[in-house]
Amino acid sequence: MPAPTRLERWYRWSGTHTGTIDAVLAALLTAFGLLVVATSEPGWWDAVLVLVLSVPLAWRRTRVVPATAVVAAAAFVHLATVPTVSPVAPVAVPAAVYALAAYGPQWASTLGLAAAVAGGALAGIRYLGNIEDRSALGMAVSAVFVVVFLAGAWAFGRIRNLRLEEMANLSERNRLLELEREKETELAALGERTRIAREMHDIVAHSLTVVIAQADGGRYAAPQHPEEAVSALTAIADTGRRALSDMRSLLAVLREDGPREFRVAPGPDDLDELIADLRGGGLDVEFTVTGPRRDLPAGTGLTVYRIVQEALTNVLRHAGPRAHARVRLAWLPERVEVEIVDNGRGAAALVEPRPGGQGLIGMAERARLHGGAVSAGPAPGGGYRVHALLPYH
Image (spheres, one colour):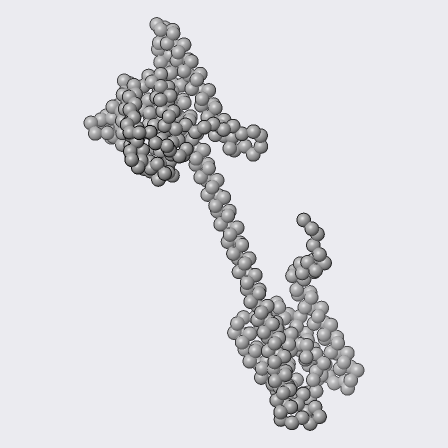
């Protein structure tokens, strides 16, 4: 980045030291006026008018209305009492008019313009109209000249005022945009945390449920059927490895450095393997597919997989012994339908709702995220039913 130029450094410094700059300029103007008065015919009244005309300019930006009012009052008093122009009036009065238009409120700016026009016309006639005994036309020209001069100072002040308002609006807009970006970042972080929590729940709940079911089955089968216990241990090891791989892939997004691990998100094509694992855990599952296979976005495909996974995990955990589940995947013309029905618990589901606080919430959130919907509740005649509809796009 190139170093700032002298002009840029001056603008930066002057923007933060406006009071100091105004005070120095007002002091210089006051000193000049007092010096002129002292070298001419000294008069205390002239010195007082010099002070009242020039000193308030030190507050022309910080206390613009009071400072300009004092200068205007002094100018009119000077106009009425002194027959010659004050040495500071040609600078102090236009500076005050400019400051009022640039930094003052609209009402004060308008009032200041009217006072400048009236006072300028009178000053032009009184101080310039008597040069070489001018005619009425000459005095009118002098009056117009002073009025135009003061009106020009006021116009430049208004331009400055509009520029300052534009800069203030841009600053406010940038502040609001920054707040909006911060809010979007917070919402994105919240969404990502929610997604990670949802994935963690699905992975951990399903894996631990399968591991527990396999471990219980292996423990009961070990005394009489050791080979089944070995098969259960193998299934436990395979399930643990897959869960560990899924956890590593999921948590990799939280790392700021180091290599990240990525896995292809599971989808409808992975349901056969999922159901086979659950069958190995002792769950009787019937799986049917109807309709021609359709392509799904990755997010929708993962939602289908997670809904089936969560529903069957709940069946394995809560449907009771000898539970039977039916999984139906229907490829409809405009959307995919997923239905999971089990015959466990029956009417008990009405008294003691299925746990799934987080699981069922996760299903609904996933479906809404992709424009679909999920319903879950006791099935007619007993058991529990989970039903989901998801659009293809």
